[in-house]
Length: 154
Image (cartoon, rainbow, N blue to C red; front, side, top):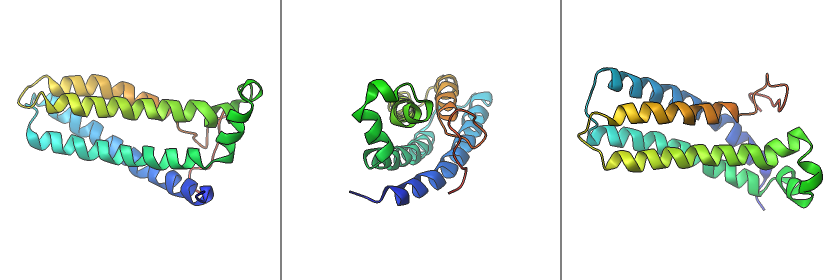
């Protein structure tokens, strides 16, 4: 079994890299969309890099989840633990929503590959990534959240 405290620190700090990349990606998608650019092979490579950064966080998160005593305790008594907000959030909600967001991100990247040299790709990316960003941002245990408060830096 891996040391979950180390993985938690890596996951916590890597979150900031992902958030910065989300801002950069949003700016990139919006600017290309407003300029009415065609989606090129270079654009696909940029999108692929963003998706890879998100996938790395997902792998770190799953390593943490599979080595977490909190997640294990959630699954040992689901009926009781589903009633406890903190345990339910980390045992089920956080993992499910983040996995969903990254799956959607991967699907968008895969779909974009087959639409190289088309203008409407950035419009589609814009519409989908708004929802992906919402899922991610609402599923982060922010320090200011009254429901699942965790420190921003460990």
